[in-house]
Length: 104
Image (cartoon, rainbow, N blue to C red):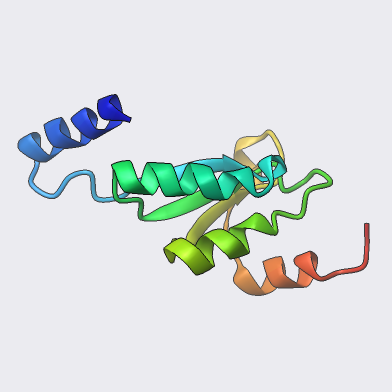
């Protein structure tokens, strides 16, 4: 975490206010441990959002609700596969429908 903080300080020296975006990438299969990860990274550097990967698997990614509720971090992108096109902008309505769907 100290190295990450140092990177932020160096960037800020080169360009005031940088970095302008700090996204934490979380694996949806991590489960509720992702909340602990988000807490620790958010303490170290101010996060501006999340990228949730592996939502194409069996995990539905319900932990993002807990993270958003506690830390107020928006989900910016989701990963639904391994190809570049599988990284998509987050659609809250579509995510909620999938989260509460009874389809496997």
